[in-house]
Amino acid sequence: MAFEIPKTTYSGKIKEIKLGKGDKAVIVGGESCYPFYLFEGDMPRLPRIAMEVYDSAPEEWPEAALEPFAGVTDDPAAWAKKCIDDYGAEMICLRLVSTDPNGLDRGADEATEVVKKVADAIDVPLIVWGTANHDKDVEVFRKISEVCHGKNLIIGPVEEGDHKQLGAAAIGYQHTVVSSSPIDINLAKQLNILLGTLGVPDELIVMDPTVSGIGYGIEYAYSVMERMRMAALTQQDDKLQFPIICNIASEVWKIKEAKASDDNDSKMGDDKKRGILFEAMSAMCLLLAGGDVLIMRHPESIKLVNEMIAELTAG
Image (cartoon, rainbow, N blue to C red; front, side):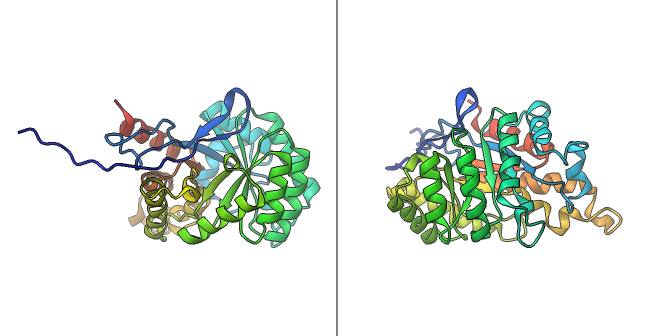
């Protein structure tokens, strides 16, 4: 008697969301099974990776992370183009770190000028990531949303404290919002309900459950993402049937294991390889939990993850 592998029947499906516009637009979502469970369902859209770009020269990045972008870190548009031309980036995530009130505190006009310059210079989807300071993000994103009308940006993080203002800007100027909640399935669902009540259509929402790297709470983030996928696919919870975006780069490259040089602790091995592997392994864990879009930093980390995606989906 032939052995038959038990299979789960899924009653739900992840929504397909279009990011960006034109020929280089990216469609994410559409899964009808758990991540990479291709023997039980379909993953018509493979996970995508956005490369991270800062709006000002990074001051705390380790040398290993800076090396691939030497000569362009003071020009966000040139940096973004290098990511696309040299490393094949399918998406760009522009981090507005200079607008942080606790840092350079640049204003909305200056931030908007940078975003528009980057958006005009590239033809792939552009994610614009704020500071999570509600007052500043509202000020900045209102201006950006208006000036970049027609660019189909993906703006975030949109949290409960500023969802009304940022949601209204997204509706008015047709940008996608990143619905961001602090590692809690109920808060994630609640925010999606609030955005829907406000009038943000489903096709303009992706979720950010907040993530972390290996050794710094990734188990908790993984379990929350896993429960989101279970609710979406087996319990028909349509408020959790959105693609998930994972902003992993900044979480990984700020930890001591990724930043410490060989001189500090020879037992930790080559610092360049260490940071690359930390990012790649953390990213892969999040893909297995249900991530649809990863925001990553190092080209070698991205290469490793893409190779693993190809291996998991071969045949």
